[in-house]
Image (cartoon, rainbow, N blue to C red; front, side, top):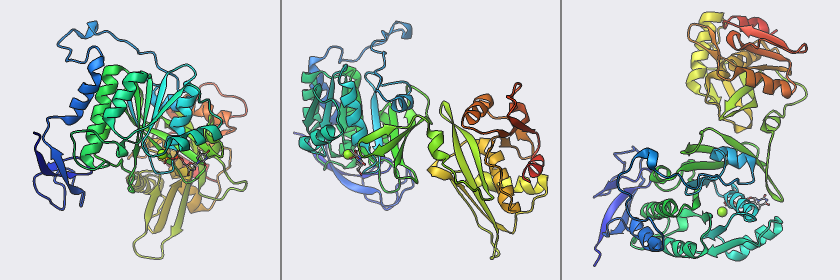
Length: 459
Ligand code: TYD
Ligand code: MG
């Protein structure tokens, strides 16, 4: 008979301990360790998958073979019918892949997946398993959104064993499990939602997907601090981890890829939540650049590179005399360390003294900029706010600033300029090495080499 034993597991990283302790030694988190009862069956999750798989060929270990002789089958991606979703996934749904969709409650995970499976059901076999909502709720939503439902198979189920059995009967190409936190797997005694249940359920589903070549979408909830509930192991075992999040504007949702075994990460897809469901936004620059008519000092548009495409966003800076001895430096959406570095470079190489000023920086629309191309726009926005001179609204900038005050080129300069020109920008402040050879007559290009040249451009 299986023996039950007690272990203490960290909810953040999944580390196991024999005794309770306040802080996890592996990840350093406090109060994440909780008691779990586990049954000593070796790898219960895998056992479940094996059981469910008995009807499928090739379930056993594959042995050793030459990489060139491994047969590649089913690499034809299934289009999700949403360009934004496809791009985030790296070009469509890969058969046999496991995709984790994370997000806050109410982000629209269930809506996005329901819309997707209904729309692809016309030419692909799908199964939508709901563990949180009743079948009526799902049907009502699909009906209200006017989605095609004739070919969509649904089931309300929370047992992974049953889901594997059901799936074997239906043989879908795409399976949705909403959500992994309410699933349980036989052989693991702890409550659904606990670390071991979530982990074993995900492991069983992943094995199942790999052996049967079914694309699986798992919904995962996000905790208050924005991390995926359940251990990080969940992110390790899936092929793709995608987060659906809402920024400052509650109407819009961005789909962001954190891990992708089949494509580039840092891709974003933008959707608008409307009263008739999620609608994709093909031209996100237009929404992030929704600027006021009369521009105040400290605001500037910049081009950032998100995954495989340029995105236009507005950057705002506020420089104000500090009333206290210790001036504040705050940046939202950009790296605070780069801000500190830029302030020093501006002082040393452009003679711009901001040491007694409070400095605040914000990227509008909740966009997070991780690349260095935001250095030049940031410096310009700081200068604009400091001098109290608004920058012309047709101006756009990008470029990296080095510690010796030089302005360095960034990748994809031509594409950034082309995108900004398409959106109506005429005045470009760009690194010298990114300046285009051929320009249209209505373009005004300022190719800059050093940071002190920026000062004259804010006038
Ligand atoms: P839902 O997909 O249930 O969120 P999740 O599964 O991520 O928890 O989305 C629910 C939210 O979306 C809810 O706050 C209402 C909103 N919504 C709309 O605004 N319009 C719609 O047509 C739908 C279906 C939902
Ligand atoms: Mg939901």
